[in-house]
Image (tube, rainbow, N blue to C red):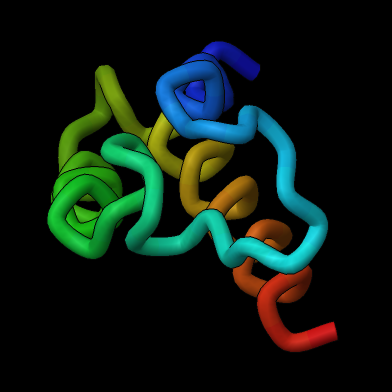
Amino acid sequence: MLIDLDHLLATPIFDKNRCSINFHPLHSYIAISFYGIGLFFKKTRILCIALIFHMLTDAIDCYL
Protein backbone atom coordinates (compact mmCIF):
# COMPACT_ATOMS: atom_id res chain seq x y z
CA MET A 1 0.00 0.00 0.00
CA LEU A 2 1.11 3.53 -0.66
CA ILE A 3 0.74 4.36 3.01
CA ASP A 4 4.06 2.62 3.64
CA LEU A 5 5.94 5.22 1.58
CA ASP A 6 6.44 7.17 4.79
CA HIS A 7 8.78 4.39 5.91
CA LEU A 8 11.28 5.76 3.39
CA LEU A 9 11.64 8.88 5.54
CA ALA A 10 13.03 6.90 8.47
CA THR A 11 16.66 6.07 9.07
CA PRO A 12 17.17 3.15 8.81
CA ILE A 13 14.28 2.41 6.48
CA PHE A 14 13.58 -0.92 8.18
CA ASP A 15 14.19 -1.73 11.81
CA LYS A 16 12.67 -4.97 13.07
CA ASN A 17 12.46 -3.60 16.62
CA ARG A 18 10.71 -0.33 15.73
CA CYS A 19 6.97 0.10 16.13
CA SER A 20 5.45 1.86 13.13
CA ILE A 21 2.50 3.22 15.08
CA ASN A 22 3.10 6.85 16.03
CA PHE A 23 6.61 6.77 14.53
CA HIS A 24 5.86 7.41 10.85
CA PRO A 25 3.70 10.40 9.83
CA LEU A 26 0.96 8.36 8.13
CA HIS A 27 0.93 5.94 11.07
CA SER A 28 0.49 8.62 13.76
CA TYR A 29 -2.45 8.76 16.12
CA ILE A 30 -3.64 11.95 14.42
CA ALA A 31 -3.62 10.26 11.00
CA ILE A 32 -5.41 7.22 12.43
CA SER A 33 -8.12 9.49 13.83
CA PHE A 34 -8.64 10.96 10.34
CA TYR A 35 -8.99 7.42 9.00
CA GLY A 36 -11.66 6.83 11.64
CA ILE A 37 -13.49 10.02 10.69
CA GLY A 38 -13.35 8.97 7.05
CA LEU A 39 -15.49 5.95 7.88
CA PHE A 40 -18.50 8.24 8.20
CA PHE A 41 -18.28 9.41 4.57
CA LYS A 42 -19.45 7.16 1.78
CA LYS A 43 -16.73 8.20 -0.68
CA THR A 44 -13.84 7.41 1.67
CA ARG A 45 -15.28 4.48 3.63
CA ILE A 46 -13.61 1.62 1.72
CA LEU A 47 -10.22 3.33 1.72
CA CYS A 48 -10.43 4.11 5.43
CA ILE A 49 -11.41 0.54 6.27
CA ALA A 50 -8.29 -0.65 4.45
CA LEU A 51 -6.14 1.95 6.23
CA ILE A 52 -7.49 0.99 9.64
CA PHE A 53 -6.85 -2.70 8.96
CA HIS A 54 -3.31 -1.76 7.93
CA MET A 55 -2.85 0.12 11.20
CA LEU A 56 -4.17 -2.89 13.14
CA THR A 57 -1.70 -5.23 11.47
CA ASP A 58 1.13 -2.79 12.16
CA ALA A 59 0.00 -2.55 15.80
CA ILE A 60 0.12 -6.34 16.09
CA ASP A 61 3.77 -6.19 15.01
CA CYS A 62 4.45 -3.85 17.93
CA TYR A 63 3.33 -6.41 20.47
CA LEU A 64 4.79 -9.60 19.00
